[in-house]
Image 1: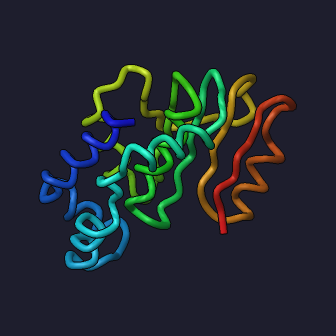
Image 2: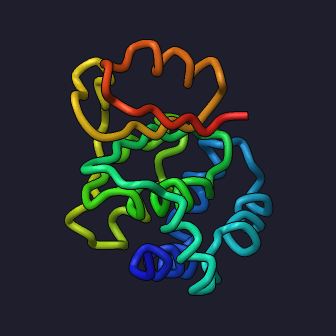
Image 3: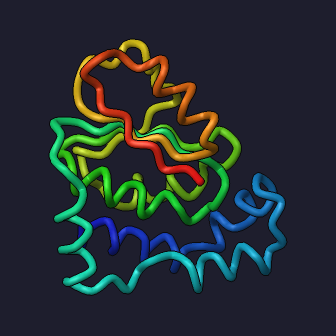
Length: 156
């Protein structure tokens, strides 16, 4: 968890590299992106905060994460929950806003955390699938998942 928080700090420090792409993809103003980076990226988590996250994350051999583009800073918490739950995490960034998630994964330099351009829900046979987005999207993915694959929806 600490490595992921440190990676987020590095991305926030280097935000000038990522902010223009995030502004274009999200439609946020440069000021809105700056506000997201400086006020809403959770880089000051205490040991108690991290312990609570780990305690509630569950336990899985692998977690695959499908991210939404609703909130560009959301990938940090999504990746933290997934990594707390599993020793291996595969994340598919939002197609509409992949910059922050990609920057985090690259900055953390954790071989247990990888990016995927696609996750074929119907091919997954083990672990968990964490889905972020609209309730309808979560329901659609849950209906396509194989029996035995736990789908954790993070929606409205």
